[in-house]
Length: 620
Ligand code: ADP
Ligand code: ZN
Image (cartoon, rainbow, N blue to C red):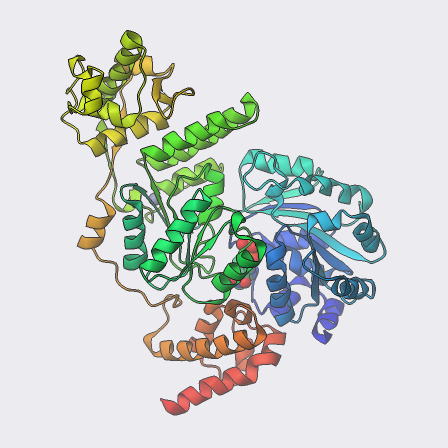
């Protein structure tokens, strides 16, 4: 506490950064943002996950007089956030529905007594008259509206309570506000600005590139096998998240992974709050847990060493996908974003859109979001380039995605497309019939299935004209026709396919079609080029000699974390332990120069870190 009053008096953002957080320099836009807010300005901050948004409001809250109010929808994470700040010597607390009356009362009193630097509040709580009155009786340094994209009605995380937050501006016009999000399309951005009444806010838009994440999108075959292979061959022992579309699939997949000896936990809205909280806490605190989840999981999860995010179903939008994959590799170390998708995903998603409630405009919007996602899946150029393009940013081929590493081939699929489209056309025109993928492929490949025989489809002129392609290749053709809107899923039937307005040009030979041919399958690739087993989350470039020290420090940290009941990274992050192991400081003074060692942590842990290193030196 003394540290902070001291630093507040002497002030200066750089000083707070160094003393409290132990960091030597701001990153990217952080300094500009921090200075702008300290000066009383409003800001809209768009930064990818892991970009360093928290410091943008934490530092100004410590520099400005009064309490920084952080609005966040993530009640289940507030305790961890407050614990992490407490470890830094920052006076933080939260108000939410998990507290009993007495605890809230204590927090309120601390707030009024000016004994807090940061107060986390859920939006629904903030907007109660009681809470507004409370805030009116204290001094406010700023409002930080975290996960600000929750105000977007079209987005993937809409929270109606967020709409009420524009009133903060009316009630406290002189208190600076920052809205922060990792979602970055122009549409979302202007929606945030408008709905939160951030008319005069300066916009800070960081690059959305996450160079350490390797993007990899594969054709879905036997998805469980493919997933297992990914986990065993490339991420054995790593912590990661597996996203599924439905609760059922979450349960099944988690059970399957457990049977295979992988420590997997399920997470979805159907599980009940207590079990959800327990699984989340285990994921954050234990090493190497795989969380199998619906998209209900993950917002605000700041575990830095998530090594992979795997999607075994097609996400609904690029925005959602990018948020979810962004949860990998916050520590900047190599991480994987892996997605398996197939024809069935496209059919299912198109049908879900058709069946969704909401008006035409809403459905059109869902449709174009899906189209953008499919475009990403089927692109033969750099995935990252495509992703960033979606967020209005440009870059050249990244060298760290599947398309850059093993470029897929493009082939002229015009004739194949014509065969498929004319089959669908004939069946509809001549017989008024529509079918799904499987039967259409049987006809083209000339298979005499009971259904083909029963309907007399072997008499069609198109029967058997597609034997040059395998069934899998035909599925890939169908998938791409759907992705390019040259086919649609018929609204009446069950996944039956129909032509679109655009199909005609291909049928008439006015349009040629370049299709993607899958690069070598994961199985073959992995077999030929086995991934070198990597030690778990070791900082890159850690010299061999420093590794045993790092391991010793890691065990020391695990013990402290357990006794404090917090995740290990709240004590020190791997990057910091790595630097300590490398530098082997022999004095508190030397230790204080390590990036990530602030004054409070030096006070709390300095001696025992030095002892840990010294003991090691004796032993070696
Ligand atoms: P975001 O909220 O944008 O996802 P965080 O605020 O959690 O990102 O920061 C991501 C990581 O980067 C954290 O581990 C944080 O400690 C670290 N970090 C942020 N800013 C700095 C900085 N200026 N110097 C060193 N590390 C930083
Ligand atoms: Zn690339």
